[in-house]
Length: 347
Image 1 (cartoon, rainbow, N blue to C red):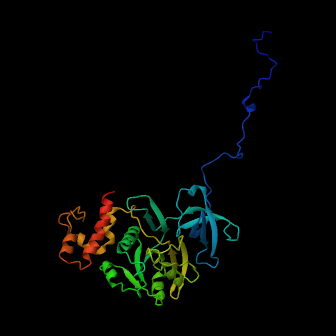
Image 2 (image 1 turned 45 degrees about the vertical axis):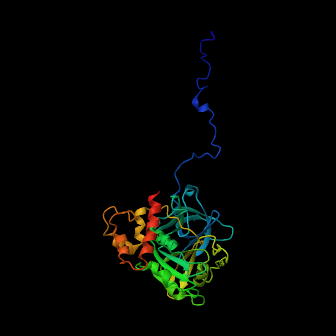
Image 3 (image 1 turned 30 degrees about the vertical axis):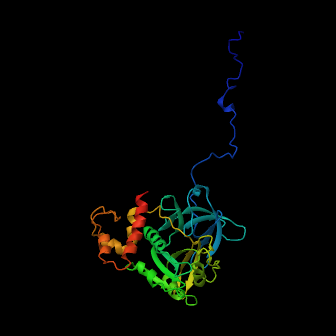
């Protein structure tokens, strides 16, 4: 028999494809898939605080089984910021027992989102809190001196986010805040006055009922003291103002949600770390004027496309200020508006 001729006795199935060795999947026998489980058993929870990749969430809110749980985020949420106030869906061990860890697998749609940037030219935003519907701006009448332009920035950020602003002035026993408050004449802004030993806890508390209120303010203005008075179990650290620099020491190092329970109902107090600046790089320039409601009304008489800057022709706001129709604080209000608009026009 020639070596070129096939061997009729040889098994025809010797080289059958069934005999090809297949390398097993080193991570298991099941092929990988992008499909994720539906998690029909996920529970809705409120994010109370964030600490180094761990989230304290409240499960069973407003029920007899309300309790706190520690959770981590699912891998698919690694690029999504999860912040205090978020409504999260959690799975896993939600008993809250010591040593247990649940997992956040989704975030419900947010109603509001309060943000700030490092400065006005930085459009990279930092999310502060989600789902707040009120902002309580805390300033001191003195020690440290109040900064009207910082309050203007808070107002812009609040109104841009669709959040109602409130203002409380502390330490009014040191200085009469009347002159400072004139800067905000004409605004629909509820103002509370607080002095040492005469803190209007009940009045402020009544405004918190039924709301999620984020507290913001410069370091050293007494924000943490106010939070502790409203929520006695909060235990927020308090500090003092440096006599040399006039600056307050940062006491609140993280943003946390605290349950407010008052004589007329409950709400949520969201305490944030004190800041000395509040960048608005994420805010659209045409939203700046919205925070100056008194000037915005006059601006309706401006020509189309008016920038309201010093070189703008026939600007109704500048004409009203020059004629004294906006009162003694009109020039300062206009200056504050134009400073912000100039910054944003240079971006």
